[in-house]
Length: 157
Image 1 (cartoon, rainbow, N blue to C red):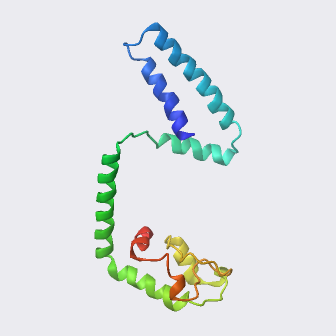
Image 2 (cartoon, rainbow, N blue to C red; image 1 turned 180 degrees about the vertical axis):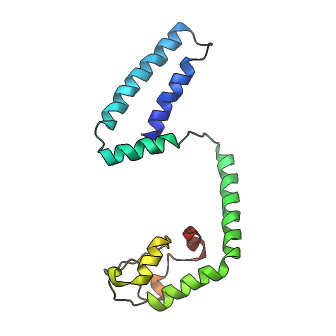
Image 3 (cartoon, one colour; image 1 turned 180 degrees about the horizontal axis):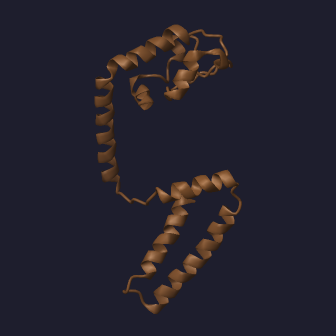
């Protein structure tokens, strides 16, 4: 929906350019009218909370078109930046891994009674990916430790 609204807004910007013929201008106005009708029918279905979130997101969003090569360069820079971040905070990530190993391995506590769970949630620590039914961070042993690695821990930031 964000993209659709931004697209309609861009049509409005194109209409204000002076290099359009009457036919092109009319076609863009028609596209804008029908686009707004479709957009408004979707917006009317949102509850108040979703609507507020949508309008706030719309204020802070923009459309950016990049080719595949620009995206590849961006991903390489991001990967390099994440590696640098990990190296700078290696001790912190090791501490989180040790906490998980000694507190979450074979844990049977409920998450509502665990102080470590609350801290992990607050700091967006990625879970191991196993669901033992009691806590997202509980795991059985090293075989369940598949989804946690140094790169994923960078997401904690």
